[in-house]
Length: 385
Ligand code: PLP
Image 1 (cartoon, rainbow, N blue to C red):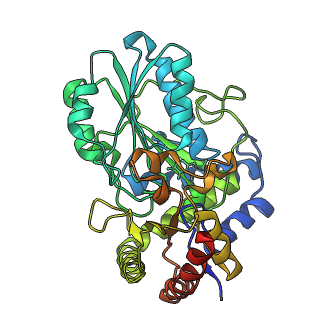
Image 2: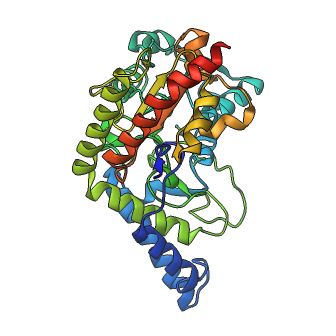
C-alpha cells in the first residue's frame, strides 16, 4: 500500500485538470497574442480561466495576473510594491514564519535600504495584533502576512490585520501569501482589506509552474517582467495557456466541493491527531479548531530524528515531509518556522509534517499510524545506542 501525506508540498493533478491541459497543448495551442483563429481560441481560453479564478475570489478578472507560481507572485508583490511606493515610505512589515518566497525578497529589500519589521509568533504560530499595531507607522508602505503557515497549519488573523492596517493608513498595502489557504477556504480579498494575494496551482491539484497574483485595481505595483507587454504590460512573457487553463479547472473543482472537502479534511485531521495521541511521547504542534488549517498536522517524535523516520516511512510507501519540502535542499534539518516557535531542539529535530488533500483516505491515515506504531519503538531504541 502507499500513503501520500505530503499534499502541502504538492498534489496530484485531477483528471479534469489533465484533460484541459492536454487540450490546450495539443489542440488549442495558439499564441493568444496571434491574430489568426488559433490565437483567438487561445485568448478565449485565457479569458475564461481569468474569469473562473476571479469568480472564486469575487473580484474583477482585470485584477488576476498569471505568474509562474507563488514564488514569482510573492517576489512581484513585495519588490514591485516596495519600488512603486518608495516615495511614500521605506518601512515594511512581515512575520517571522513566512515561506522563503516572502522572507528572501524582504531580505533583498533590506539590502536596498528598506527597513523590515519581522513580527514574532506565539508557540502555536500566531502573530499578535498588538505587535502589528505597534509596528505600523507613517513610513509603512507594505505588510505581508501568510494566510496559512505551510509547516504547522496556523491560520493568521488576516481579517483583523486588514482592518488594523487600513484604519491606520488606507494607503498601506496588504499582501497575503494564500498558497496554503486558497481552495481550502472562502477568501474575499475586498472584505479582508487585502490588496494583493498570491496563489499556486500545484497545491490545489493543478499543474506545477503556474499561479496567479490578485492585484486590487487601485494598487500601485511596478511590473517585474519586462518584454512583449502581455497581461496589460504588467507581466510580459508568452502566456502559459495550458497552465492557466489547468489552474482555473483546479480552482473550479476545489471550490465546487469546498463544503464536503472541508468536512472530509477535518475528519482526516482528527483521525490523525487522535492516532498520534495514542503513541507514547508524541508532541503535536498543530491545533484543532478554526485557527488551524484542516489539512496539516505537524508533530514531533522525540528520540527519533525526522529524516530517519521519514526514510523508514518511505520504505513502506508513505510520503511525508520534515519541515517544509520547498526548502529542504538547503540541508538545514531544522526549519526557521520551528525555531520561531521556540521548540526545544530535540522536538524541532524530530518533527514531521503530514498533509492531506480531499483525495486522502482514512486507510492512508491508518496505514501511516500503523507504521509509526511499529517503527517508533524500534527507531528510538536504535537511537539510544
Ligand atoms: N508560499 C507558501 C506558503 C508555500 O507553501 C509555497 C510552496 O511550498 C510557496 C509560497 C511557493 O510556491 P511555488 O511552488 O508555486 O513557487
